[in-house]
Length: 146
Ligand SMILES: CC(C)(COP(=O)(O)OP(=O)(O)OC[C@H]1O[C@@H](n2cnc3c(N)ncnc32)[C@H](O)[C@@H]1OP(=O)(O)O)[C@@H](O)C(=O)NCCC(=O)NCCS
Image 1 (spheres, rainbow, N blue to C red):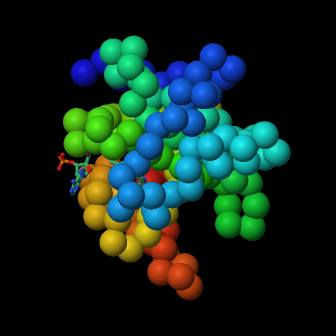
Image 2: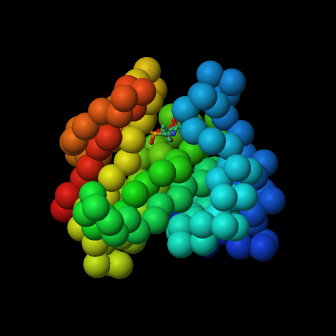
Protein backbone atom coordinates (compact mmCIF):
# COMPACT_ATOMS: atom_id res chain seq x y z
CA UNK A 1 0.00 0.00 0.00
CA UNK A 2 1.54 3.30 -1.11
CA UNK A 3 -0.09 5.80 1.21
CA UNK A 4 1.00 9.42 1.38
CA UNK A 5 -0.20 12.58 3.10
CA UNK A 6 -0.36 15.72 1.00
CA UNK A 7 -1.07 19.30 1.83
CA UNK A 8 -4.68 20.38 1.31
CA UNK A 9 -4.54 23.30 -1.11
CA UNK A 10 -6.39 25.06 -3.89
CA UNK A 11 -5.97 22.07 -6.22
CA UNK A 12 -7.55 19.40 -4.01
CA UNK A 13 -9.81 21.03 -1.41
CA UNK A 14 -12.94 20.55 -3.52
CA UNK A 15 -12.20 16.86 -3.91
CA UNK A 16 -11.59 16.66 -0.14
CA UNK A 17 -14.95 18.29 0.54
CA UNK A 18 -16.66 15.66 -1.65
CA UNK A 19 -15.43 12.75 0.49
CA UNK A 20 -18.27 11.26 2.48
CA UNK A 21 -19.12 8.89 5.30
CA UNK A 22 -22.01 6.46 5.78
CA UNK A 23 -25.08 7.95 7.46
CA UNK A 24 -24.25 5.98 10.60
CA UNK A 25 -20.76 7.51 10.83
CA UNK A 26 -21.76 11.09 10.03
CA UNK A 27 -22.62 11.65 13.68
CA UNK A 28 -19.04 11.07 14.79
CA UNK A 29 -17.30 14.02 13.14
CA UNK A 30 -18.10 17.27 11.40
CA UNK A 31 -18.20 17.23 7.61
CA UNK A 32 -15.06 17.94 5.65
CA UNK A 33 -16.80 21.03 4.28
CA UNK A 34 -17.31 22.35 7.83
CA UNK A 35 -13.72 21.52 8.85
CA UNK A 36 -12.36 23.30 5.77
CA UNK A 37 -14.59 26.34 6.40
CA UNK A 38 -13.39 26.51 10.02
CA UNK A 39 -9.81 26.44 8.76
CA UNK A 40 -10.43 29.71 6.91
CA UNK A 41 -10.75 31.40 10.31
CA UNK A 42 -8.68 29.11 12.54
CA UNK A 43 -5.72 29.02 10.26
CA UNK A 44 -3.21 27.36 12.58
CA UNK A 45 -4.49 23.87 11.74
CA UNK A 46 -2.50 21.49 9.57
CA UNK A 47 -4.68 19.70 7.02
CA UNK A 48 -3.64 16.58 5.18
CA UNK A 49 -5.27 14.85 2.23
CA UNK A 50 -4.70 11.09 2.38
CA UNK A 51 -3.82 9.42 -0.93
CA UNK A 52 -3.43 5.77 -1.80
CA UNK A 53 -1.71 5.26 -5.14
CA UNK A 54 -2.64 8.79 -6.16
CA UNK A 55 -6.30 8.31 -5.28
CA UNK A 56 -7.77 10.55 -2.57
CA UNK A 57 -9.14 8.33 0.21
CA UNK A 58 -9.51 10.60 3.26
CA UNK A 59 -8.56 13.70 5.16
CA UNK A 60 -7.20 14.55 8.59
CA UNK A 61 -6.36 17.70 10.53
CA UNK A 62 -4.46 18.60 13.68
CA UNK A 63 -3.17 21.70 15.43
CA UNK A 64 -0.70 22.60 18.14
CA UNK A 65 -2.32 23.15 21.52
CA UNK A 66 -0.22 25.33 23.79
CA UNK A 67 -2.31 26.28 26.79
CA UNK A 68 -3.53 25.34 30.23
CA UNK A 69 -3.79 21.65 29.30
CA UNK A 70 -0.20 21.43 28.09
CA UNK A 71 1.70 21.32 24.86
CA UNK A 72 0.64 18.72 22.31
CA UNK A 73 -0.84 18.20 18.88
CA UNK A 74 -4.58 17.74 18.86
CA UNK A 75 -5.79 15.40 16.12
CA UNK A 76 -9.33 16.66 15.76
CA UNK A 77 -10.42 15.47 12.34
CA UNK A 78 -9.89 12.07 10.75
CA UNK A 79 -11.95 10.36 8.13
CA UNK A 80 -11.59 7.73 5.47
CA UNK A 81 -14.15 7.80 2.65
CA UNK A 82 -16.76 5.08 3.26
CA UNK A 83 -15.82 2.90 0.30
CA UNK A 84 -12.12 2.90 1.23
CA UNK A 85 -12.53 1.91 4.88
CA UNK A 86 -11.18 -1.32 6.31
CA UNK A 87 -8.07 -1.34 4.08
CA UNK A 88 -5.56 -0.08 6.62
CA UNK A 89 -5.60 3.54 5.40
CA UNK A 90 -6.84 5.08 8.65
CA UNK A 91 -4.17 3.34 10.67
CA UNK A 92 -1.38 4.20 8.22
CA UNK A 93 -2.51 7.83 7.98
CA UNK A 94 -2.51 8.33 11.75
CA UNK A 95 0.93 6.72 11.99
CA UNK A 96 2.17 9.18 9.37
CA UNK A 97 0.56 12.15 11.12
CA UNK A 98 2.18 11.09 14.40
CA UNK A 99 5.53 10.88 12.60
CA UNK A 100 4.99 14.37 11.20
CA UNK A 101 4.32 15.76 14.66
CA UNK A 102 7.54 14.15 15.89
CA UNK A 103 9.44 15.83 13.12
CA UNK A 104 7.90 19.10 14.27
CA UNK A 105 9.41 18.38 17.68
CA UNK A 106 6.32 17.36 19.66
CA UNK A 107 6.11 13.93 21.29
CA UNK A 108 2.50 13.98 22.45
CA UNK A 109 -0.62 13.80 20.35
CA UNK A 110 -4.18 13.78 21.70
CA UNK A 111 -7.51 12.94 20.21
CA UNK A 112 -11.03 11.91 21.20
CA UNK A 113 -13.88 9.72 20.04
CA UNK A 114 -17.56 9.37 20.75
CA UNK A 115 -18.64 6.29 22.74
CA UNK A 116 -20.08 3.76 20.32
CA UNK A 117 -17.57 4.62 17.61
CA UNK A 118 -16.03 1.15 17.75
CA UNK A 119 -13.85 1.64 14.69
CA UNK A 120 -12.18 4.71 16.17
CA UNK A 121 -11.94 3.06 19.59
CA UNK A 122 -10.18 0.00 18.14
CA UNK A 123 -8.00 2.04 15.84
CA UNK A 124 -6.64 4.27 18.60
CA UNK A 125 -6.17 1.33 20.95
CA UNK A 126 -4.20 -0.52 18.29
CA UNK A 127 -2.00 2.55 17.79
CA UNK A 128 -1.24 2.70 21.53
CA UNK A 129 -3.35 5.70 22.58
CA UNK A 130 -4.32 5.67 26.25
CA UNK A 131 -7.48 7.08 27.81
CA UNK A 132 -6.90 10.22 29.87
CA UNK A 133 -10.41 11.42 30.54
CA UNK A 134 -14.08 11.67 29.71
CA UNK A 135 -16.07 14.77 28.81
CA UNK A 136 -19.46 15.49 30.39
CA UNK A 137 -21.13 14.41 27.15
CA UNK A 138 -19.25 11.10 27.36
CA UNK A 139 -16.58 11.68 24.71
CA UNK A 140 -13.36 9.83 25.47
CA UNK A 141 -10.04 11.73 25.50
CA UNK A 142 -6.88 9.89 24.56
CA UNK A 143 -3.21 10.55 24.20
CA UNK A 144 -0.17 8.97 22.66
CA UNK A 145 3.27 9.85 23.99
CA UNK A 146 6.36 8.61 22.23
C1 LIG B 1 -12.15 5.40 12.13
C2 LIG B 1 -11.66 5.33 10.69
C3 LIG B 1 -10.79 6.54 10.38
C4 LIG B 1 -10.82 4.05 10.53
O1 LIG B 1 -10.24 4.05 9.23
P1 LIG B 1 -10.07 2.69 8.39
O2 LIG B 1 -9.20 2.99 7.23
O3 LIG B 1 -11.41 2.15 8.09
O4 LIG B 1 -9.35 1.76 9.45
P2 LIG B 1 -8.20 0.68 9.14
O5 LIG B 1 -8.61 -0.16 7.98
O6 LIG B 1 -6.89 1.39 9.05
O7 LIG B 1 -8.24 -0.21 10.45
C5 LIG B 1 -7.36 0.02 11.53
C6 LIG B 1 -7.96 -0.54 12.78
O8 LIG B 1 -9.18 0.15 13.08
C7 LIG B 1 -10.11 -0.77 13.68
N1 LIG B 1 -11.24 -0.98 12.76
C8 LIG B 1 -11.32 -0.61 11.46
N2 LIG B 1 -12.51 -0.99 10.94
C9 LIG B 1 -13.19 -1.61 11.94
C10 LIG B 1 -14.48 -2.21 12.03
N3 LIG B 1 -15.31 -2.25 10.97
N4 LIG B 1 -14.85 -2.73 13.22
C11 LIG B 1 -14.04 -2.68 14.29
N5 LIG B 1 -12.80 -2.12 14.28
C12 LIG B 1 -12.38 -1.60 13.10
C13 LIG B 1 -9.34 -2.07 13.85
O9 LIG B 1 -8.64 -2.01 15.07
C14 LIG B 1 -8.35 -1.99 12.70
O10 LIG B 1 -7.24 -2.81 12.89
P3 LIG B 1 -7.30 -4.36 12.36
O11 LIG B 1 -7.60 -4.28 10.91
O12 LIG B 1 -5.93 -4.90 12.66
O13 LIG B 1 -8.41 -5.02 13.13
C15 LIG B 1 -12.85 5.26 9.69
O14 LIG B 1 -13.68 4.18 10.06
C16 LIG B 1 -13.68 6.53 9.60
O15 LIG B 1 -13.40 7.42 8.80
N6 LIG B 1 -14.74 6.60 10.44
C17 LIG B 1 -15.68 7.72 10.43
C18 LIG B 1 -15.06 8.99 10.98
C19 LIG B 1 -14.54 8.78 12.37
O16 LIG B 1 -15.15 8.13 13.20
N7 LIG B 1 -13.34 9.34 12.60
C20 LIG B 1 -12.69 9.24 13.88
C21 LIG B 1 -13.25 10.26 14.77
S1 LIG B 1 -12.63 10.07 16.37
